[in-house]
Structure formats: structure tokens, C-alpha cells
Length: 78
Image 1 (cartoon, helix red, strand yellow):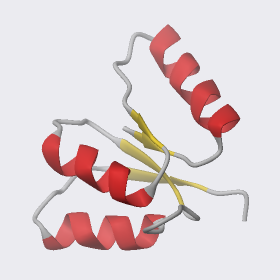
Image 2 (tube, helix red, strand yellow):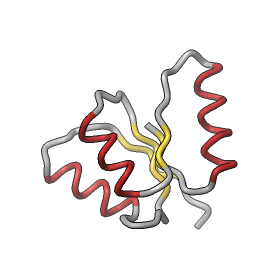
Image 3 (tube, rainbow, N blue to C red):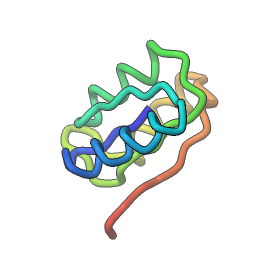
């Protein structure tokens, strides 16, 4: 799962991971990413820190509070 609000960055990451034979879902907002993370069965989430609606840290806290132990990598231009 990739949650990235910059379309070019999200598309670049998705393309690279697909070329490496990974199945990828991409969300562009925090709430959409949270929905996909809670409803899906992902092996990893790549989260942008600055996201519209719900930032990456809030998204991670919500996942953990709901018992989701999904491994997370943070991606940020900061």
C-alpha cells in the first residue's frame, strides 16, 4: 500500500514496485489510505508524512489503535 498525495511520486513508486512483481494499491489522501489499510491485507505500507485529511503519523496511530500491525515505511520530502 502506498499513500502519497503527489501524483508523480505515487505513480513512480507504484510502477517500480509493479515491475518488481508486487501488487500495489495507491491512495492520495490520509482517509483513503486508512480505509485501504484497514480493509485490505497488505504486507507493507509506504506513507507520506504530509497528507491531506489525515497525516501519515495520524494514520499510523489509528492503525495501531485498531490492532493493525502492518509494517510501515515513511516517505517524506521534509
